[in-house]
Image (cartoon, rainbow, N blue to C red; front, side):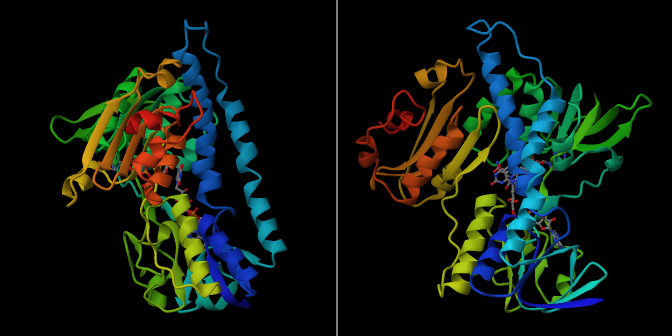
Length: 452
Ligand SMILES: Cc1cc2nc3c(=O)[nH]c(=O)nc-3n(C[C@H](O)[C@H](O)[C@H](O)COP(=O)(O)OP(=O)(O)OC[C@H]3O[C@@H](n4cnc5c(N)ncnc54)[C@H](O)[C@@H]3O)c2cc1C
Ligand SMILES: NC(=O)c1ccc[n+]([C@@H]2O[C@H](COP(=O)([O-])OP(=O)(O)OC[C@H]3O[C@@H](n4cnc5c(N)ncnc54)[C@H](O)[C@@H]3O)[C@@H](O)[C@H]2O)c1
């Protein structure tokens, strides 16, 4: 048994953990970090980035499909293995590059799952014990357990991103950020896709009017939805295919035959099985309890990123929390978390996005807010690429001349939403935005039509 002692010890090397580790080291502390899987974390290895590589290819294909007979004659052939190899050129270098970067900075990189034995006391695997003055937990999230008969047959989101071939038929359980994106990627690249979701729209948590248009686009891509329906079991047939038992909220149980089942029915914080109770750290199913400075129930023990019961489980939120904690610990600041407004994107085709107030929040707001919704499919920026759907919804405080919420659906919505985030965050007056000169023709310039 080897014993190691550090000023700071960090559990988990995703975007949150590594950012904090580097800040602690640059502040002159001795720092150790441990990782139970590959160094780098979910986002660059089995999350945002590999998904975006597949999405990029699907988006290119979608553009060609829309212009069939308008300049294109045939659809290009898809090689999923080549696409998988292309994706791996981004993901494979991450673990060694991360370890190299951290080691060169003087951070000791351990390998193995961390397990608390008491406050400031952690075992790493069977051979290493650690004592640390300050501890940062950044263990992220993992797929929620989907406890149904036949659960051994499904792939989770990481499995989807590693598939060597695109199956002919694919059934996706869940239609949140991940399921909605995977459904569109697979359908566009040629699979017959069925989505079984307990919610009532293709992208839970996004604006309902925009969701209706996403349904139209998804059905145009041939995706079959069963909403308000739970996947209740998976059975394997003799020929290697599967039957998924589906239970609608109202109505009879039915079955869908498929070649592959993907579990995208939510993620949960990684908090169990690491002895948090032995250290006296409070947590529940929503994550580790933290105060506004991201301190847990035990002093000098902090939690950041997806494992903390604080902001949304998104990469920019994880790194924001790491920055805030570093400012407080190493720069003498006294910052408290303040999450609004955070732009979010579900990478459907086209992407659906949101920042600021939702319609429900606007309806409950004391201010007299105006809601403006418009279908923009026929606007030139969308029509010239034969867009299937495009729209926006703005929530406006006319008295203060401010935008307080923006919901966009369209080819470039994932970029344009950042302009609205800036306007909302910096409280830029609508009249100021109206006077801006913006590049034409561009999707960004459409904001002037939206606020005109
Ligand atoms: C398919 C998918 C797509 C996504 N797309 C987006 C997107 O487009 N945009 C976006 O903003 N977010 C996206 N996310 C979410 C994003 O990946 C996470 O919010 C982000 O990675 C959180 O960073 P983190 O550092 O908190 O956790 P993670 O990146 O999950 O890192 C935590 C690390 O801790 C390790 N660990 C866990 N337990 C232990 C232990 N006991 N000991 C040691 N190590 C441990 C894990 O192995 C992991 O590497 C996506 C997620 C998925 C799954
Ligand atoms: N683009 C992004 O920013 C991005 C992308 C991916 C993930 N993420 C983050 O990861 C988190 C998790 O994403 P997610 O898509 O896994 O979860 P989610 O919570 O967004 O969606 C889960 C879906 O599964 C459904 N569901 C749950 N149990 C079911 C069952 N038994 N049968 C059928 N449907 C069922 C829910 O109704 C919902 O549609 C998100 O909250 C998000 O913060 C973000």
